[in-house]
Length: 566
Image (cartoon, rainbow, N blue to C red; front, side, top):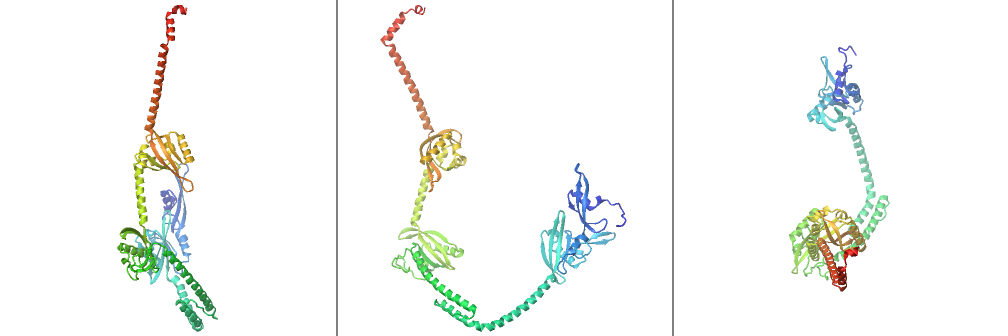
């Protein structure tokens, strides 16, 4: 180890200072070992007192880079002449697989080498390429793969960032193309030779067997041509060649199945035609330019004309004529949707109104793509449906007007006790500004509206027994917690299975009527008291005016009260 010029103080070493500064486990910077003068990196961990938290010391583990890391890289099999090296983001070498030193002697000091100054040409060229490509090696944050030319040969490079705590290195692998192309080239030449031999052999065998195979194949070809011309009754004779014999049997079976399929297709076509003919819509096949191809079905054709070539007007519908001549109304709109259907391939549906027989007629037009430049136009008379929809719209508007302007409150509520729908009159009865505020505020009718909970129970019971309630009266709370009297008529709305969907009904504020009834009752009671008082006065007057009362009064006046009491 030699004589130390100064006493060894670990507290002055880089690994000790790094752990002391970070107060946690940390890797030191690469430094020259005090004893070996080799590039070294230390994993150090500070140790603190459990009593006062003061620093007791630092534990460290040294890694001698030339021995441990460079030795590990040298043992890697990197092709035949590939190299691997590790460098810091600053470009300084950490370790290499070439065994070269990663530092140089300058006077009495040793300085670490930059990768671009490596003695190994591959390492130096790769480092220069990375430096030129990225300018700053800190920009390499993910695994990168490159290739570049060096010494007249392509070099493949892979750069892998390696980080562990404060450790931030780049692991670089460089392999020349020749390391793995030599085996590929040899294999390629071998494959080419085998392929040429196989080709020559195949040609020879083909020449020998072609004449033997040609004759039965020609028979199959001839039968196939006849089948294509519509002659379905084709049979190929058996062949001594197993494959050709199997082909012949397959062909005969196919011909038989094709014959049966054509028969079934004709029957299916007749059925489909009968079904289509029952459709009341006008159905026309047309090209993309609007030229007519065929009338598929129409209730506008005369019944006597089964060919579908004549309109109800009696005019002919010859092939090759434009659809515009027979569907002139909104023709530009029709062509627009035809082009949309051809461009998108999707069904196009729209409605228009035409004049037929001096009457306004509503029609629904559907356009479906049949082929590349062919569409099916289906026109349906929807006048009755539109009239029904208009009548329904008017009825809905009338109902909505009645609902919105009714003086009585109208409601729909769920079985759980929440309003589903309410009109403005109901909101006013309960003191709310709008039906929306009412429905948002009242989430439990039983608890928030009913003053007497037993009345809600009675109401629900009557609905369950009778499905409707008439003139049911109860007291309820308003928004400001004032109490009013309500009269309600309600019924239950069920689904097809008898399950309750909701309750609906009409609500009236009868508070004023109740007040008047109470006032009338009070007045009747007071009138009854007054009548009873007058009756008693009359009875007293009748008694005092009687002769008996006069006689008694005369006798009492003659009595000496002092003598009477004594």
